Image (tube, rainbow, N blue to C red):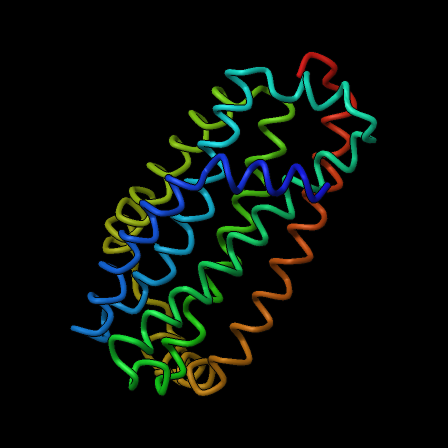
Length: 223
């Protein structure tokens, strides 16, 4: 398992370096304006998804899974190695973002939002990557990556369409009365707790997707 993890990380070393340099842009953006803190989540997501997608594309192109199946490894260990690689990428990306933030602006980590937003980004990246692996082991890397791009487009455009439709809908009474604002303020007060809870739920979902991926990988003998 460790050899597969090392292989994937070494194979993607140039991609990791590239995204690390891009990450500096996200760090500087956060330093310039607190409103850019959500870019930290974007960086974590970009690092994990970008490296995994590239590795799986290369694996599919070179029929790497066919080679891995010839090794004295059980199928579940191959899949677990892939999931562990993505988990390591998420953890290292969060630590890298924190480190760069401290180096270039030691006041950055004093803001609880700047600490927790990257954790949310890591959770989202892991959930999406876990689902991506399910599609990879079912349909192949090329098709799965194309489906993920469609999802990205929907992720960005659906909220815009939804918000425009809401303009024609009467405002609910609980919003006009200020109840929603009170709820949001209470959530913001315990934002760190909610973020850690979300990360925990994300890890559980990630583990469940791994179980589904193992089942898909065993069924798909072509890879």
